[in-house]
Length: 328
Image (tube, rainbow, N blue to C red; front, side, top):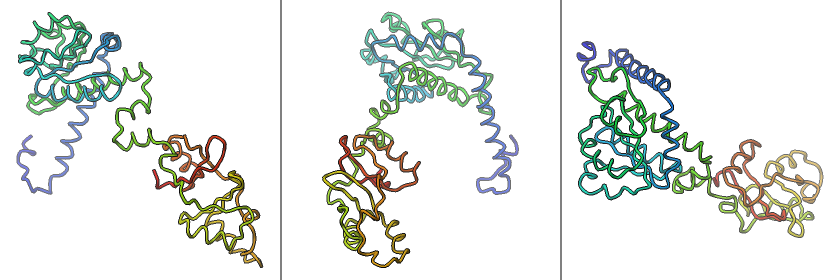
């Protein structure tokens, strides 16, 4: 402690002391999490079943740092298939108790289990009769004794050198909230597409909700017939600005000819190459993807096959468009 206390704000000679401090804090937190894993009892599956059985919302309530963590837990639950919101105990005491419906489950967070604002709410909450889960660091506390289920968050001490600031305890609370959310996701078979429904504005939601047909190029496609000469195909490729020509006949895709194919063809320097037909130069049966496939699957296919472009077809294998890797 004395070494850290004597460090000046602009000191560059004692980095090792600060690094040791960070490592000590993180190691202590990691050990506490390992201990928490060993503290999980039948109360945990009981809490999960209580939430699964509820036809209402999961209401998280806590004060101070516990409240801040509670907001995060509520947000995580809500985004992973468990309707949830945070209720501030102070506001609840002044009217927001009306938010609680008979079908709701309460999760009350207090590391001491004696938080004054929660103690003042207990008589009202008991009279409502809602199922209740306590997340506490003292299983013999008042809050623990008055809840239907108790999740034990007890620790030896806070990481704070004074054993005062909530540090390890808030980490434990966050981790237990995540454990609940993950268990509920697994019970509900919550899938990536379900996650995307609640995150439509993010890049992940966009990937998981967007189909190939939503991003593909479908107008003014660079199309040739099998009889088109290389000379004319180069003109079509140039105007198409995608480095590719699609060869089709009667609406059916027959092959593809790329700028790479063009370079390889010109290197052969065979006489009359420029007048050869696409039928003799194209790559038949090119890689395609259905227009209704999700864009994330198209991305995986392009990365797996190390290609930058996919030809898009409909259910009847008719040409629909072109998808390029930077269209993601």
